[in-house]
Image (cartoon, rainbow, N blue to C red; front, side, top):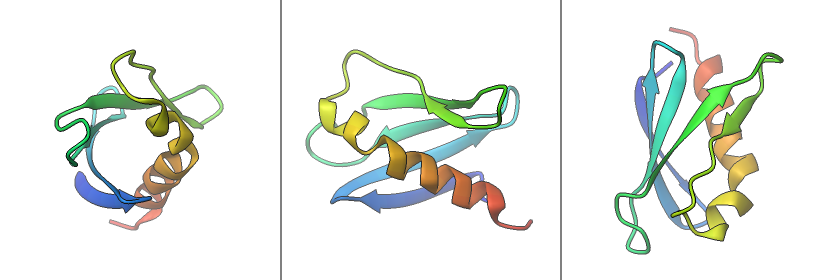
Length: 80
């Protein structure tokens, strides 16, 4: 698993930073639309990743939420 990784999803570049305690991801967009926009993903009691909503993010981030969560799951499955 990587502590920091980048992923392009539907033409938008995201930087994922994994935090150890509590285990979560801080996610930043890295494209011209909202340079520096950040939000978080945390794991719920059932072990599913959920995006924490932030009112400043555009709607397309929510539209990509399934792909963003898949990127996190794939990173978590990478053997150390």
